[in-house]
Amino acid sequence: MRKKVGLAAVLTAIVALVAMALPALASAASLTEVAGTVEEKASELDMVWVAVATVLVFLMQAGFMFLEVGFSRQKNAGTGVAKIFVNLALCTIAWWAIGYGIAEGGGNDFFGTSGFFFHFNQTIGQGEEAFNVAGPDAMLMLYGLAFCAVSLAIVWGTTLERIKFGAYVVYAIVFGAIVYPLVAHAVWGGGLLSDIGGKPVMDFAGSSVVHLTGATGALAALLLLGPRRGKYDAQGNPRAIPGHSMPLVGLGVIILWIGWFGFNGGSTFETSASFFGEVMLNTQLAAAAGVIGASLAAYFKSRTLDVGMAGNGAIAGLVGITAPSGFVEYWAAPIIGFIAGLIVVYAVLAIDKLLDDPVGALSAHGLAGIWGTLSVGIFGSARLVSEGAAPGVWYSVFGNVPFSQSLGQLGVQGLAVLFTFVVVFAISIVTFKLIKSTIGLRVSEEEEEAGLDISSHGMYGYPEQFIPQPEYSTGLPGTLGAGVQTPAPAPAQMTANDTL
Image (cartoon, rainbow, N blue to C red):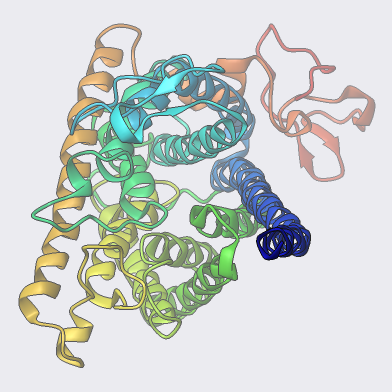
């Protein structure tokens, strides 16, 4: 009888315990479900931020367009619009078909080997790092395209007012499919520069990957293209060829400045801890300091507040902070930007004596890009540097970081600059030589004199400046109105009704 009572008591206790445990088990299951939902929503929020950043980076195409149009003369204003459209279109297809695969598709130290013609349910990469394409991957692929397109846009600043439009077409395809992807793979795709003697190259958003790459391609084009007619006198001294609209230049700079918040801030790829805010603040501080540095340098050189130099100072500051934006403390950002602003002024004046770079791309994107990449090895913070990387030399001078480590990291940053320049220049110079020897690189003297708008596109960017409007004529020979001289007659294929 006792055994029966004991067994009943045990069973009753078990039932009671199970009854008590069920709510807890249900609660644990709910917590697991909630945790999974929170993680999923966090990932979705990250992708929303990347989507916003992508739009901002694509907006930079308008910035480049206005900048180049403003620095061009009126007869070459319209061609800048066509160039932006065609280059963005061709770069998009080249990146989708080939470029993304080379940049991000696993592979070896030099190039990726999967991910071509990006499509759903496609496996990209090998081994543990392989992944199947899905929505988030498409967003990241699009963000990479935006960077590639920015780098390509930089190339053409040195070639304004004299390059054949066909050269844009050929080089855009080569650049989007091969040139930029090779450099991106080396640094960001697990390639050669992702581990040099145990230290990775640190280029947060692309001072070298994007900006030095574009400027190096620009240098290759310029060396084969030569200067604009009338740029240098008989003694080889440079003459100023002013652009037609500084307001457009200013608008272009402001649009680029705004787009840069997506360029640098979006490179966090996440919203956790709101770290993108730190990156964006660094970006703003450096841009502001770049304007101040360039304005002061220009004033000391010419005793004038040069508008174009101030704009290039902003761009140089932004380019300079692009690599270190996620690796340095706030105090370092204005120093980096200020020095970039100084660099751009003296570099523009020095380069102008030898090469005709109408927008200062070699200085603002090339030399400032080099400075930005190296500055990570000087100011990189122990709190922020990548895993395996060493803090900057500053922390060896004023801290306890061994010089062997910080100087080693600075050397790694220098190797990234050298690699980028050599690879991009070699491919670009060969490409432009092939273009020059086949379809031709430069327009004829007659076409250059007439302007690329009419000679390449059959229409003017500012038609009222070049096409006579008889309805406004006073009837007096040689005038269209009080004191306005009749412009040269338009070519036969043009009519007064043609517009941009």
